[in-house]
Structure formats: C-alpha cells, structure tokens
Amino acid sequence: MSDVLKALEGAAPDTRRPLGEILDAVRFNEAGLIPAIAQQHDSGEVLMMAWMNRETLMETLRTGRVCYWSRSRGKPWRKGESSGQQQHLRAASLDCDGDTLLLQVDQTGPACHTGRRSCFYVTLDADEARVTSEPMIDPQTLYGDKTPH
Amino acid sequence: MSDVLKALEGAAPDTRRPLGEILDAVRFNEAGLIPAIAQQHDSGEVLMMAWMNRETLMETLRTGRVCYWSRSRGKPWRKGESSGQQQHLRAASLDCDGDTLLLQVDQTGPACHTGRRSCFYVTLDADEARVTSEPMIDPQTLYGDKTPH
Image (cartoon, rainbow over all chains, first blue to last red; front, side, top):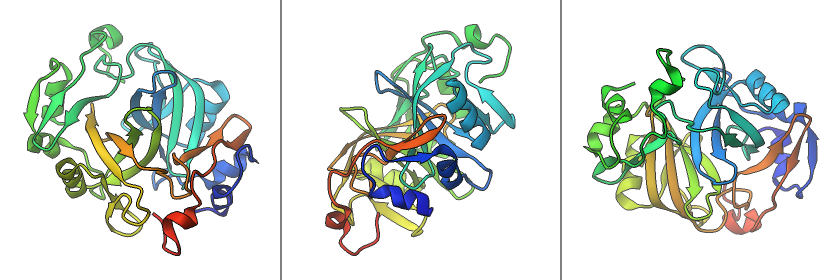
C-alpha cells in the first residue's frame, strides 16, 4: 500500500490531502482500472458496479455526472448517454487500500440495462438462484435498437 | 454474457435455477476471482469489497459465514479469523452480467483493518481528499502483532 494511504489510516476525521496526491496512490489494476460501486445516496440500495480509469474518475469528480470506462467498448461511458438514465454524483470515496471506489449517486430510473432499478436481481442460496425483482421499464424503451449500456 | 443469465434478464420474479447452473455462468476473471461487495443488511452501509473464487463463494453460501479469497496471501480468508470481527451472510446476489456479487451481511464491529466500521473513509472531491470517519477500535486490539486482515 502507498505511504500516503498508510498515513491516513490513523488520521483524524477531517484530515485533508490534495486530490492529486491521492490519485497517485490509487491502485489501478493492470488495465489501468478501478472498480466503482454505485449506491443510491438516500435509499442505500447498491445499484451496480462498473470500472473507471484515472481520467473518467477525474471527469466524474469535476462534472458531478458519473462517467465509467466501458471495458467492452474501450471508451468512456457517461452513464445514461444511451438510455437517458443518468447518475449524478453526491459523494465519492476510496477504500483503505486504494483499490475500490464507492459512489453515492442519484440515479434517474433504472441503473440496469434490463430496466431494473439495480443490477443485483439474481439471489443465490446454497441450492438455487432466484430472480428477485422485475423491470421498472421495458429495456426497448430505454435503448430501442441500440446496444446497452 | 452466458445464455443462462441472458434468459433471466426478462424472467419474472421468483423464477428459479439450480445453483450449479448459475455458478457455471459466473464470469470469474483471469485469476478465477469475482469482486464481492459487503453491505450491512440493516443500515445499508457499504462496508468493504473483496474477492471470491468459486470455492469460497460456495463455502460462504453453504456455511453462512463470509469467506473471501485473499489475493495477497493466496488462500481463503474467513473474515474475522484474525480480528474476531466476523461477517455473517444474510443474502447474496449476482449482477446482470455475472461479474459482481453483492453480499448482505451482519458485520460484528469494524469491517476495516484500520478499526473503522467501513473501508470507505477517504472522501474525494474535485480538489481534495478528506478522512470522514474514525476507528471504532484500535487496530492493535484487533490484530495485536499479526498482519491484517
């Protein structure tokens, strides 16, 4: 772990560092990406997880509109640019060892390309899996003939 | 995406599949791992993110005690085995494209090796980073001279 993050482990609340110093300490993976969990800021529902690189993280912090990195398309993915269902950032935080982000967001409508509010709708137990939610919106309405997301 | 998960996209709530069929559709990464987000089941607080392989996921579902795969130590990591701060599983779910898990857990005490409740305590904005919580317990109390986690 970086010395910068190590030094924050015992730091008192409200201790501050310049953003660039922390971005240099983020442990992006071998593809230059970090997982970002999106949580609806008021309900606490975990909506989705996607990936960011340094540039899309900086864009997200600067603009307040969540921008991931699409691994399948190999380009920035401004959430909602196809579907209209945007994510606005309320707060972002980095975990203790600098390899995961948590985004508190305000999500318009469904976060999932299936039209469901959350991407986590297949519940697992020791014997079977079970679908636990249904679409809010027909995905055809969100995307027409375009490919999600 | 697997045909199995594709078929569940439009499935009605309570549609069921055998667990093995879904485990075969999970998209473990090149290291055989999938990220697992741990959320406190009642408060909604996101506590941490760690990684599981197929075996530790199956153990977790079977025993109800959360077991990750420690990438640094290269072995199963039964959360709390060093610190005593266990995670008990309330529910597990897989996301739409099969590459992330969400665990609803009941976490005893701090989830973070720093003694904080959550690992996400460094908040980022456009200019700076700021520590936003403090330890519930001195990490020395949790680990003594042992290495976390």
